[in-house]
Amino acid sequence: MEGGDSFLSCAVTLEWMTQGSITRKVNYKTASLRLIRNEFREMYMEISSEKHAAIRFALKGVNVFKKFMVEGKASIKFQEAGCTLFISNAPPTNLVGFLRTIFVKMTGDKDQGNNTTPAKQTMRSKLLSGKAQAFEEISPVTVADIHNAKKKIPKSTLTTPSPPAKKRKNDDSVKGPAPKKLYSPSPLTNTCSLNPEQQRVLEACLGGKNIFFTGSAGTGKSFLLKRIVAALPPDVTIATASTGVAACHVGGTTLHAFAGIGDGSGTLEHLCERAMKLPLVAQKWRKCKHLIIDEISMVDGGFFEKTFAANGNNSSWKTIV
Image (cartoon, rainbow, N blue to C red; front, side):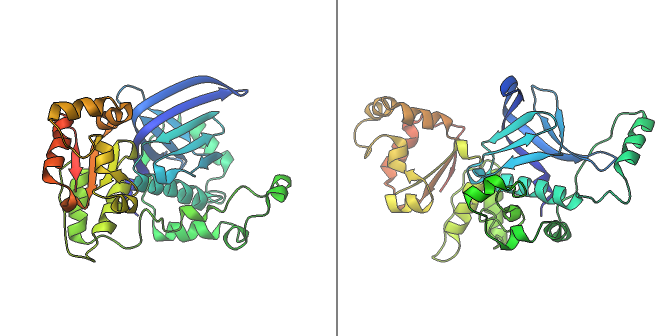
């Protein structure tokens, strides 16, 4: 695992609730989430941004909702603090790694300190220290950590299917689906690693450069493209292709539908007016920061130029073809 799995950059909303009512709400358009430990080996999550002071939550008694993590969304409920953290617009690959790190570290740490640092001793040490806590970033997840976490999960969650819905309501011992998804290989982070050339392309995309990559059949173009899509923030990344079939393959739309200018016939002024009459098209243009075009060789050169001209040659766009 990479050390970067203890850090995540995304949009965040924090909600504090009392008796079912929201008492406080804070929105972060861009926030940094960091997993840290204090000198007593207690794990915390730190949320920080340029406009807000850092907030730390102890990772104890948390509930993680990860159903939509492949879309860059998740939520974490901090029971003790009465606060829920909503994550959005996170690069799916990074989000999966971040949640996996939380799961593995918390599972592996269960009862770890009972023989060396009992709760009473830890509390006594805190009271006697009389100084501010020192925090440091947690260590990367290792293979040993994953095996340790697996051993501490009840075997029933690994081998037996979930009970029927009616039985589940009456069985307090069942706590939702098996957690194995967070320590098993993720489809977003395919077990096949990128070769050096593919890795350079991915790093260039993440670095904000305009990229064109090509190759013969079977060289891993589609594999690399899916890894790129999974590594970019979904809310500002648009995957397109020259044809409908190719667009389905990358989980996107056609370039023509995204551009909103039909087949591109007519003057540039006419095309701009046509696109601006479609609110959703104009909204996508303004929101897009990463435009991906698959099968670019099948796109007419004149149409490609008009697409970018109609957008005003937005300098914030990064194009991957």
